[in-house]
Amino acid sequence: MIEAPALAIGTLIHTFLAVYYIRMIEPNYPLDPETIYEVARRFANPELVDEAWRVFNAYRLYYKIEVIQPLAVEYDLKDPRTGESCRFDLIAFFPETIGDRRSGTYVLEHKSTSRFDADTLEGWVNDGEVIGQVDLWKRLGLDLRFGPLRGVIVNLLGKHKDPQFHRTIVAPESWQIEAHRSDLRKWGGLIQLAVSTNSFPRARNGCIGRYGRCDYWEHCAGEGVDEGGGP
Image (cartoon, rainbow, N blue to C red):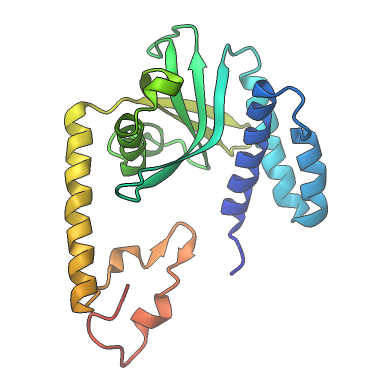
């Protein structure tokens, strides 16, 4: 499957950001964003690489004087009891309070986007990925390693003609985290029921997403498929 241009650009931006922040933790890290850029141009679509580089460079300049202490980059986390997992793009400590961002430790989730509408900017308070990250952090006691978590900062990088940037702070309440856990338990039960009965109802609201058709498109859309045979 050919990767969609938007997804490819987002992946490249994430890579540039990862190396950029890793070098703040390890100044002698053997790679830098410039090296990644040159290598990527030789092996990937140069136009997509240049677009990702344009947005990343604008981001680097925009936050050039930011006071930040990166603690971990691309940090994987998994609950051995449930198998639930996530990856934190960046864990960082901000020593200064600026506006509604109090000093303390945050998870930053990098998101590249072409839109800066209200949903994109502020619609993260009910996002399962974000709430799940806070849940796993608290459940597995990462406070002991990185300090109390203030919240998740959704770090938006806008791919506009003149790149724009926005950060939304999400700090779920305890009731939201517990509701999220309850929802996961219920979905887990439904999945077990589907497996035990070998009946998998089609989720047609997910047939076409932002990156194109679901991998099971032909299976569900084809004639003669047994009822309940979709993913």
